[in-house]
Image (cartoon, rainbow, N blue to C red; front, side):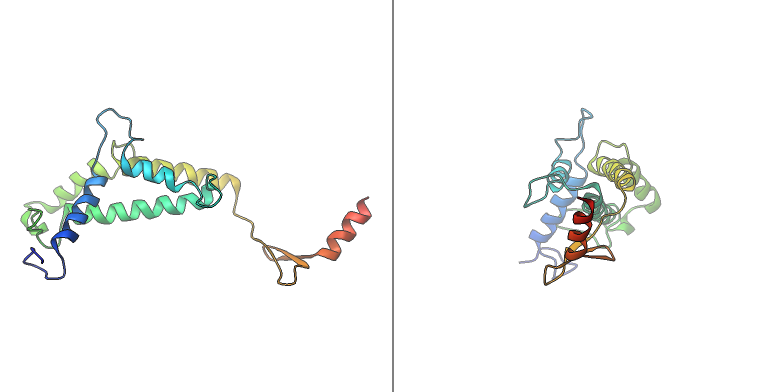
Length: 172
């Protein structure tokens, strides 16, 4: 049964999930150590490849971090200036704020800036570090075998197994 009177599609449990998601993003550290925050910890777990249990390369990991940051920004934008009031959560609509720009700036400065004691601050730092490492490493090389397993494709260059064997034979 939906408890919100502005939309019959949004149920109380959905709003509580939205509230919980927002609480993860505004959960801050009072000690300055933010590694224990759930979202920061979760982002660290995302850096581990599921099947190999090794750390992902910076090139691959930054996409996960960018996605998390995007989701966090969207959630906090709706948290800062909700389109409609969330009566179940007792959150007013954006129109309920006298100065909407001031409210948005407050949320941005407090939760969305690099160096803050909130998860997005750490994620922005992690993404910037990862991009710097990925830039130094260069782009990934795509290596794949042909269906007959006789040709190796390195990006756009083809190397036949016969020519590889010939090169080794000539070198020896």
